[in-house]
Length: 205
Image (cartoon, rainbow, N blue to C red; front, side, top):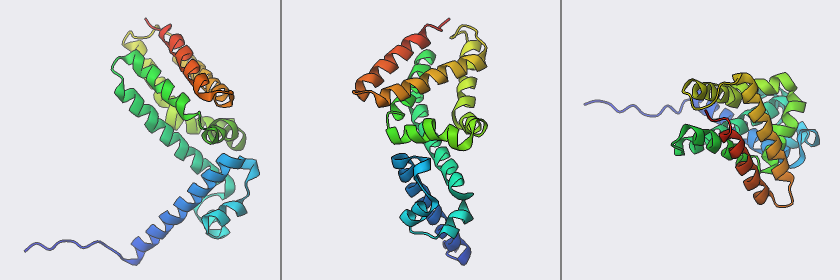
């Protein structure tokens, strides 16, 4: 009779579980605090107190407050990437995929806390080069590749792909800032999405 392998509850697994729990608590509380107060308005002591862990635990898992912030930024980027991908997957026409992804990004950035982490604090905290490197991993690299594919397929008119990717991305960032700070954010979001959709369609081949 074949033996069923029992789950391993040894010391190593328990240690990993505790480590994941600690990391999760630090990220969750750091994200909440950064969203509410901004990077400069939060201390490492506040993060560890909110997470219920020691300062040593923070430095064990991250390179200080900046290291926690970078991990929070990557978490935010990954979540936005999933939202954009889900919107793109629901669209059928390639041009509408591009518009749907842009719409999803703008909608995500309507959250002031998310916008503060992603667009306001990240460039200042990490520096332009490191911020762009994170963006390249999660957004810009995939976006540029998609634009290039659309050009190759004759969906978009030919443009320098790097220039086009940065121009559309920059427009989306500014639109997100504007919409989130508007007196009526939902109306501003709809206007931004509609305007950018017209702009994107104007690039059609």
